[in-house]
Length: 251
Image (cartoon, rainbow, N blue to C red; front, top):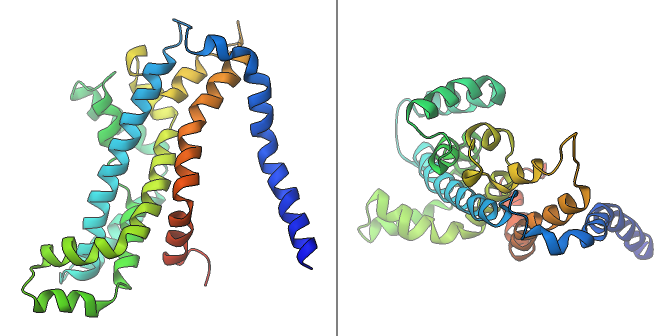
């Protein structure tokens, strides 16, 4: 039985790693050009993607954790109404909000500006819901001990809750970072100048109907996925723990 399990895992690993192996193999010929092509600002786009992904990840974790803790622990008569309103936004298709968001960003003068890429993604209804569910199950004796020591609600949150929630916070941060790094449509609309391109937009410029540069595209794609692969490998234990603690495993 154990041998069969290992065989199944090996087959699954090969299936999932095969596209990556093909990507690296076919991109070898473009490694010498990938950072020297002046038409494609790959280094700048990597830096832009890093700034956007880190900014959105930090913003979402901070804002959504505060909102989730407030909904879970701070007494408020209309907390349920607020929660339902937040969750209801998850049923609104993203495409519906593109035009209003673009109008707002444009009126603020944030086109071709990293603020236009970062700020609209600082809040996530799903993350608020997940944090709220997590904090509802947080051990109340720890919070009560903090109150007995004279801590305020903010003190309990910052000095008791946050240090004991690092695994879950790290899991949410990993998911947010990967999602932000892989964004394409919104950066394509907002980053109208090549100086504000993210890496996904830069990659798309290599694939045109007139002159598809497949080898260079594969080489650049290999470089672009290295940061998220590294982050996933380093923090995967937090990701697994976080998924378990949210109850998404169906247990």
